Length: 386
Image 1 (cartoon, rainbow, N blue to C red):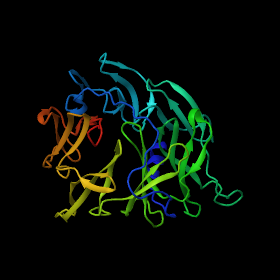
Image 2 (tube, one colour):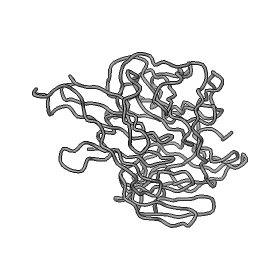
Image 3 (cartoon, helix red, strand yellow):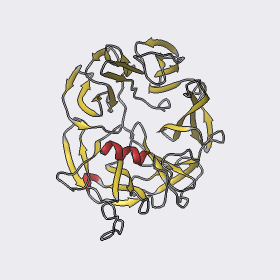
């Protein structure tokens, strides 16, 4: 149920007035960046023998976990299906058992939306520390549509997306859904530190997705420029920066002039005063004799906003990279698609680049063998640290 709710909100697109805010350059905040603390190369790559973890010289292969979500300091939340079942600490090479629902990427706190305790209870926002210990929980607001006593009384449900915590405050997208679409609504909720003081923010700003900088120093959002909710159609987007203190929009940015509404925003990051957005596009070819559409995933580059101007990182339209220090990054280069029972989706080769020299890393993007499924994840920033 929760996974379906998160998916529904992730596909949400809305309409509303333009937000207030400066459109010239990036806005400064007082949120201190959290050191990533990564020992290059750090990654989880898919192998046919399991999930291959590495942090510097520490290596481990885990056949019982499918992917990883990375924490500051280089530890990894280990996923089995859609659930966290362990934390890997490369400092000790030990796995500590924990049990959590599927989190978003976390920097200072793991914030989850969980079903309430008991029949009919509202969803709850639950905060865990980075060791997986519960800190607090609070009930989340339910749908406010005035449907009491009508045939729609049991039809309206509020669904929440993933939660992003910055400077103690947690932001959640939500969507009120009704089968007849007569009571649909959407918004963003800000929950204060320790679960106190929930309030609606970004009023009438049609937020598509929230993005937390890899170092936890900034919260951004992609928004629709105009139009009614359409459940995931391709739309023209803008980028906004959010003040974590009160949830207001402090800056609005048009995307690069080269941007096309067929481009998908895959990652958003902020490093210092520079904002970075990585784009991809799924390009469809002609259908084959069975009526199946051939499709390819094309990189449209990592674009950087600095001083009010956009520029594309050289080479980022053919490869993807995550910086793990001023001289280190993990680079993914696309491979030609092949029919393979063990592989799913688009395949990449992975490299560790240190001071410009590349070393091939053993592993793939996806593997599937029997009932085991493994998927790559790499921590880092879209730009080298200042």
